[in-house]
Amino acid sequence: MNLQFLNLLIHCLILNMIQEEQDDLLQNKRFTFKELSQDALEQLALVKQFYKLYKLAMKAPPRCKSEYQQVKYNGTLYNVGDSLLINFYGSDLLVRLSKIISIKSFKDDTELPLLLINFYCNKDNIAQQYGEFLPCMGTYEIFLTDKEHAVLVDSIKYKISVMTFEEYDQLEEKGVNYYTRAMYNTQLEQFIPSPQEWHTSCFCLVPTNPDLDYILCEICQKWIHVMCAKVDKQDIEAQEHFICYQCQGN
Image (cartoon, rainbow, N blue to C red; front, side):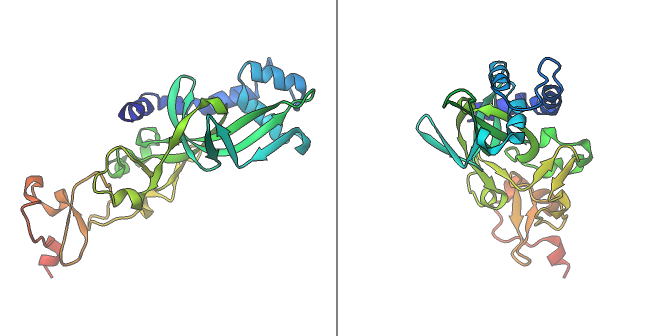
């Protein structure tokens, strides 16, 4: 799993190319299909232009496609809304399964199942304007983005568990567990909700980073950054009682 996360970081630049790739697919001069047809289905599938094929299918009459809530692959059921690790052009990336459609052949009973996916990003992929909030973002914190693509079902490697911030924060042993507390719109370069709305515990009002060390004030019951508490990290366990300087002054 550590290696998979490393791969995610190494290949995070792929996310920045996805929107350009989608635009290229939709404006491709070799394939100027205006509507879904057997010719379009065969040629686009052959060259693996699945996102353009998906776009054509979504504009086609209902009889040309079916939409499902789950798909079974290699004995495992995958549902819309699941988070997955997929092989995307040779790289392992984290995605969310957003839609499952099956495009019907025009000449027989065969169908081509496609998965519409949205990519997750991490703090390395966000706009520079959020630089001040980077210290509050955890190592395994990810954000669902608006960047989408279409892939075949055989790109799935397996399901990934993505916790809420609250679930992750309660873990005694954090380990390699992904969590999220916001979505990230790559076109608007905005978090939803914004970092200013994220949970805070320390009186510095910087959003909580579960990976950092905190100490509990027994008076106000707030978790204070060790740095803000002005306590040496090695002295935390030795302290039976801690009162923050704000409470000491009251």
